[in-house]
Image 1 (cartoon, rainbow, N blue to C red):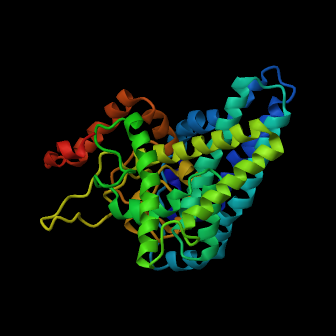
Image 2 (cartoon, helix red, strand yellow):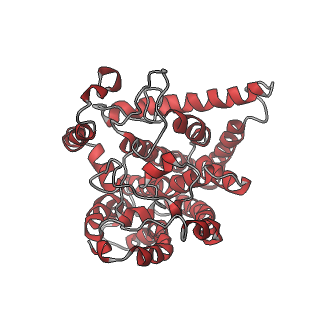
Length: 378
């Protein structure tokens, strides 16, 4: 809980350096290999990153505590928005993550101390880093206007075979969030295992529909070279071919496996971020404007540093163009009881999830329980 004793000014300085913590899971991949080499328990070390992310980090979130600092809108936000340091930091993740991805394939193809248990742990560990860091950063980048950031975000998504997110998230999810029309907004009472297949299918289809509509407005067919989805999926295919040629069949399994882990992690986070929350339908038939009340917020400092403030998700949906370093916490936003890592583990066990979260949803809508109507439930 030491974070509570730091002044907002000191916390902003701490976080400026603290964002480099994203390097810990990235370098955790080679470290877990080095510690496995010559060990009596090599398979166990292959699971090191997953164990730390989903076992240790949730506990450390409670120890470190919440982040008390919001940047001042007049004095802090303008210079922080202009400072290239924060943009450089997010872009730097791209070459390092892609390098880690190639390194991980080489290790799996050449290291013979692991049986299938260690190999599975290695693939899931790499996928965890690509999902937790890679997709998080890509999410930050695809919301920005500069072409460099747009393309960097798309490349990271192509590296996990989920390029449709670049289209659907910005043009679909942010338009329909917390309504029945959004496949990434989980319903009150809906289990993770009911949510995931629906999200996979409809987010893929929605991306193609949105890109088709964009091209149609320009008088172009869906299967046109200006369809960005085609280009990103071609890049994903080239990744697959490259890993297959370089490392054989196990390289193909590795690339596909880490991709599935990464984008599944993304969709579990979507489940956590919007569970049971919805925008009210107005008399006009339209939904109320998206505000910081329509996403779950988590202000635990440690995971916020790892995830470039992704957990300040309420402010992100209210102000999608704000850069990660100036996202704010609002006490009136619905609050998660732990960071994303802990909530992901909880979501894997639906009875425990509902025991913890359903009462929070009901409390948030106290006095207007009719909002939790059958149309809003699973």
